[in-house]
Amino acid sequence: FTQSSSGKGTISGPALDVPVSGTYSVNANCTGTVKPVISGLPPSEIRMVIVDGGNEFRTFVVSPQPVMVVGHARKVN
Image (cartoon, rainbow, N blue to C red; front, side, top):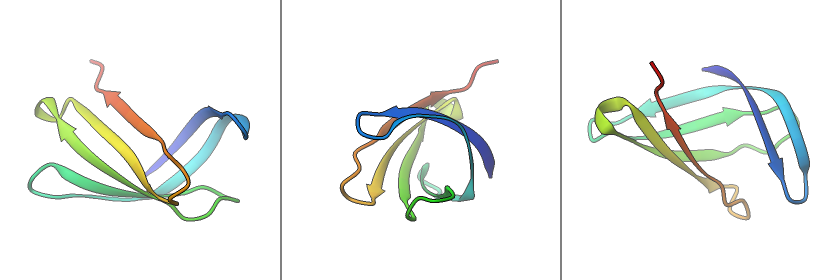
């Protein structure tokens, strides 16, 4: 996948329109793993679960361990 991401960390400050690429896999039980690649940052792993018939997914960062980030995305028609 490729995407552009924006966010703001308490320590890191704002990061706007950061290019991200990577891979993801989805299991039969609607769980999955995302491995994003962001230039200048260490490798990370995100776990996800797809819900609401594929209209939403929820994520949390499992590595690197000091990072605690959760996410929620919803399909908009």
